[in-house]
Length: 226
Ligand code: C5P
Image (cartoon, rainbow, N blue to C red; front, top):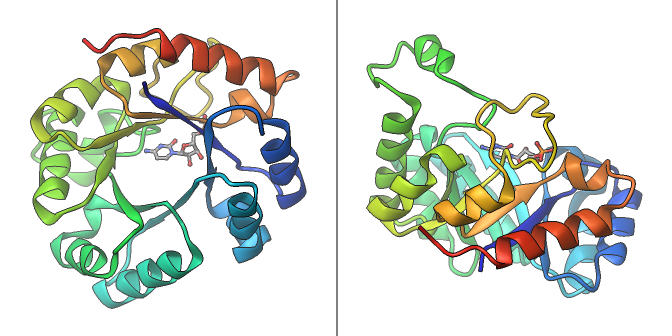
């Protein structure tokens, strides 16, 4: 069954409120820059003390030495999953893999807020987002990353081609994509092969976050892989 990762893009007090509210549910908590810049290592400790896995989503994109240093710090902090941009290149990913012993390195392929227009922005020779995502995922696999982030639109092929742990954001139960462009429902993402789906605003901005989480867990739990 796919895991549900709740993106806590909120302030530290609110984040810990959600960790407590969702204490009965088998979810992973994602700490991104908004929460980490306010909460620092304390927020990681708070989530770990509640017995939960931490997905630190800082999307590292820097020179190999800096990336490697950041991986070691995350490792020391007991982070379970850590993201790095695959666009950072071979050397930085290789350094990250060298430094990671326990933390699972997850490579971001192309953000789910991008659509085909991003390929023109990059002046990339790839014909489609799918082709580029697949190339980046295969590279991540060759280098030794444990997983990749992609949208539901690519996850079936990515899973088939790499067998990596797949993380799918841009998941919606409502008809409001917000800034996301490549969106899906939780059922679609799970059915297509997501090992973890990520949801933020539709949980933390909901009037009844617990109800949304239970609904999502139920709907992804009943899905068989395609
Ligand atoms: O609020 P929403 O459900 O759109 O949040 C999605 C979360 O997943 C955010 O925390 C965002 O930073 C993260 N994310 C993403 N697309 C990626 C990688 C991570 O939306 N490719």
